Image 1: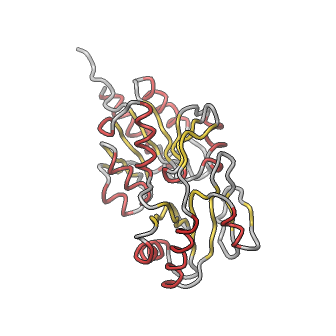
Image 2: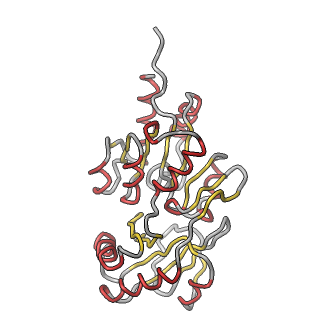
Image 3: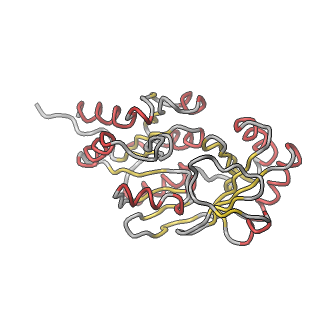
Length: 271
């Protein structure tokens, strides 16, 4: 009796809260499951909100040499060649207008920004709360410096509003100009209108000659919702935001409990 083939040609995984554990590592079990899935004919693509500058070292540590989608879909990155294949930047004039509209509704915001490019820096303005364990950033005394070079996205924080409330109010105020997503605790982002992880993933999949109907995706935050909408099967981690769980095809165990491996092993054993 011939076993069935592995059902997907593409495994798309978010990074933080999904592939990575809280200490920033990938478990041996998850590594082995991904190796087995690729041996069975599936490509693995990392799809992260982090821009390339904050992703490169993780990919290098993993020995990852494939295509990665970074910056919420803004960047398609060849990890093996260390070069950008595509990059979408935020219109800075439009972003400034959007920011003004949001602040008119909610009051002053703390601001950070991600600069474009393989070595793009993350700039942190006055009052922006850098989360414990955050990646390296350049602290600014003057927010005006943020606008000096091309950007992938802005990060905004409010002194009182929680992430979900800030995201909703920002969308209401400026949703016709930019997209606003909540990508993690304390991480609300302003992106080019129409940009999402699905945008970048579709471009990367086209390069690999893989279809949405052949893709399984794993994630944990609302910014993964478009990716789940694009892929044939969306798997939310047990630690995922309620909004993502609501649209997921299934919920696996947490990133600390090898949630990706649990699903891939099941599929591999059935194949």
